[in-house]
Structures are given as C-alpha cells and as structure tokens.
Length: 400
Image 1 (cartoon, one colour):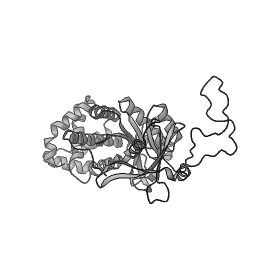
Image 2: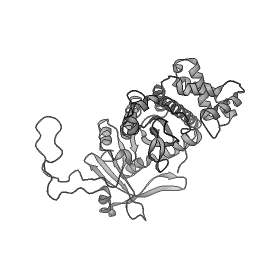
Image 3: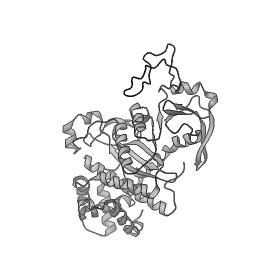
Image 4: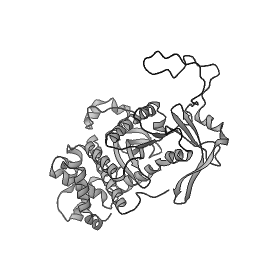
C-alpha cells in the first residue's frame, strides 16, 4: 500500500500490535520498532529487507533518524521472543474466524548465496523445482472457505547443520536445535497450534503423507487429515486376509499383524489399486473457479484399516495423477473427501503474497533469531491485511 493509505491505517495497525504484543516485547522501544518494521513491510516497494525499508520509512516520516541501524538491531540482536507472538496470532485468528477449517502444513524455500546463513545447503526446494542452494522453512497455515492465514514457521536444519554444533552456535541457533525431519517439525507446529485453539482437517503433500509416523501421530493427536501420498505406497483393504492373527494375551495392543503372512497374499501399490478399478471413477466438482467449475474424475475406497484412499484420474490421462490418505469418518461422501483434498490450493496464493508483497524471502541476515523475527513480523503483516479485507467484506484471496 502507498504511504497515504498506510498513514490512514496507523491507528488500526497500532491497535492490532497492542493486542499481539501486550508486553511491548519487553520495552517501549522494541514495540515502537516492531510497528516501524511492519509499516516497512506494508509499504509499496520491491525489496523488503532492512536498508530499502529504512529509506522508505525515512521518506514517509520525514525524519533524519537512522532507521537502518535501529531496525537491524531490533531484528537481529534484540532478544524478544518470537514464539509467544505467533501463539497470540493463532489465538487472535481463531477468535476472528472460528475453527473447523483446513490446517495446512507445508514447506517453502528461500534461495541464498554462500554457506553461512543458518540452515542453508544444497537441497531440494519446491520453490525452485530442483536442488539448489537455499534455506527451507516448514509452515503452518489455517484456511477457511474465504481466506487463509499463515500462523507459524520454523527453519529446517539439514543433517549437515544438525550435527555441527559449532556452526549452529555461530548462527545463534537454540541449544536444543538440531536435525529433525520436516514432518517432525510439522507435528511440533501442529501441537502448538492445537494448544492455541486451532482445529480442523490437516492437509499436507506427499513429503509428509508418505511418513507413516506422521500419519500415526495425527491419529494419536485426534487430528482429522487428508494428506498426499506417492503412487508407490502399498495398500490393502481392511478385510484383506493376510493370515491368522496371534491370540491376544491381555496386555498392550491387540495384535493387528499375522505371525506368518498367508501364501499368495499381496499388497498392490495405490497406483495398481486405482488402475484395477478404472470403472469406479466418476466426475466430482469441488468448487467454483474464476474460469468455471473445477472438477476431475475421482474414486475413493475406505476406510482402509484406519483411512480412506482417494485417487484422482483426470479424463485424457493415461494413469491416475494424485493420491491421498484420509481418516475422515467412514460415511464421508466422495465430494467432501475431494473438497478436503483440494483445500491445499490456498498455500500457493499465500506464499505469493507473503513473498512477493511482504518480503518473506527478503531477509538478508544469517542468524536464527533474525530469520524467525523477520518471519514472525511478516506473518503479522499478512494477518493484518487479511483481517482488514475480512472487515471490508472481501475474500482473502482469488479463486483459481
């Protein structure tokens, strides 16, 4: 937004931050620079790193103050806690829009030069579509039918970083930090979200859905989910005969696997399962897009042991294109299963605004603290914009 628009919203922005920073981040000076940083993120401009934001703020405020030094100190050295701020953000969003939406876990990449920025490595990034030198963060977003909010984010530390304590210390990473698979980071974000009142169906792509431990943890945490999976995962019907189960001895879980697999028993891949049932697919329309109704041919089989298998096989394609596991209730309609599976489209819209408009990927520092401070303030700026749209009766994003 331009300087005039932002000036008109100064009181609204101040009230928003007062609610999310009741402790003033420890003192009045930090609170003042937090607001200045958010104004810098919200102002029109190509780069949202400290130097260009400082120049725009000086011009807007007509001040000779050294904004760059103050913002750098606030971002990279000031010891305010970013996690409590994100916790309050989650509670504020739940209070505004309610529960029962989609809780989307995902990851996104940040191309970088050099090797010193915390977590940077040659690794695969969906943002790049290939292996490149980048940082990767796991994010948690909450979507309703009308809007999406980015509630949490945490940097992923590749194994080379996770086992190098000296390198982590130099980047200011917490003493308890280290390598964790992305799905484990996602579970930690979900646990914090639940503690802050967030609930709804968890959505994720196959990088998370393929991890059996991730799905089991969602079940144990009583989360409903619909997660992407790879075509090579094995699947069997709940009533498939693999052989006789051993007797239950009265302690622990009842046996669910036979001591010896029955001769001839087989478990096809989900791709093989779908291809063997090509006649079961039917067209499902899950929502209205800007160019018309969004639909495809889908089929669902369930519940399989503890979940549904949902498969999309578009007309004209030689084989199915997408696969999902879901633990929605056994009586769930195919339409609802498909609408849930398709709920992840929101993240593409949110990442575009978070990066292109608010500079999520413009942080130029190297430290753990600086990155998480910057990311937290970007999430606040995004929530401020979405809540403002909501108050004006506008949707939080476009339809596809």
